[in-house]
Image: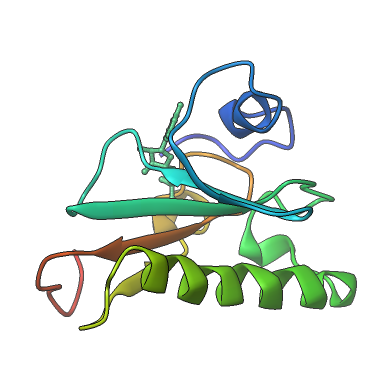
Amino acid sequence: AATPSDGPTIFDKIIKREIPANIVYEDEQVLAFRDIAPQAPIHILIIPKIRDGLTGLSKAEERHCEILGRLLYTAKLVAKQEGLEDGFRIVINDGPTGGQSVYHLHIHLLGGRQMDWPPG
Ligand code: 5GP
């Protein structure tokens, strides 16, 4: 896990199309793209295009409620788009102990295999 930081992240470059990503969904506020190191047959990251202080969920403020809801709703839309009718998992890693490595809030959408519980 990386050290928490509020500096630019690799996701800024993806948003600006400075590095390639396999984008599966985009609207004015949200971007979704395939994880470069997939942990399941379907592994997609869903991020706000404007970070606005959301380095991680632990930094959420009242003003973020709308974007937080939109990220979750986008996870549902993308799950359907990806054909995950039998189910899927969403994950948000937060901070070093949570295993977070990129400090721009993101939801992991995982599917296409049976998920274990509890996770590692
Ligand atoms: P975290 O560990 O912060 O919850 O998740 C960060 C995720 O970003 C990891 O699953 C990692 O594989 C993914 N990732 C890191 N760099 C890149 C990149 O350049 N492109 C894409 N598509 N995913 C990345």
